[in-house]
Length: 197
Image 1 (cartoon, rainbow, N blue to C red):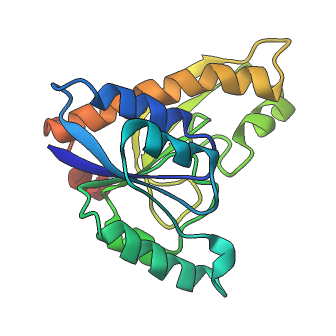
Image 2: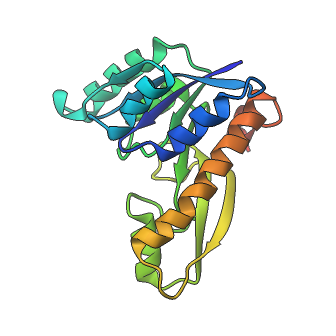
């Protein structure tokens, strides 16, 4: 059984999908802790699903490096096989990547390498493209430039707003995440191999 720690900044819609998938006794992974970099709304899912939560508030530390060191300590307490950044709206410092990669993965609402960064959906709308997508990557020290685990195209409709487009991307992100967690847990996907290639 794979042990997952999921890190969030917001409401945790991808996290909820993972928690619901893991309620199936046949699902080969379990979320053992939920962490956040602030008082994220998604931490209430811990109570709902009986999962421990923790918060390592970025603002409580003098710099990114000391915040990263505290985050590493907290995540390591749970001895995860995989760390999932699921809407964590903060670049983790290199020490975090070094501590957990390649078993550190991230969802992203664009077809990478198109539209990296925090405003991928807004950027796709502004660029006037006809399609964007969803991606799942291994986190490295670039901005959304790590090895791609899975991705899928999503059309941009003529009347799409940032909100409507994001609402169509999210279910695809969730599906890609759950499928990848299954593949990793069942040894059908080797993240070490992927990171080397």
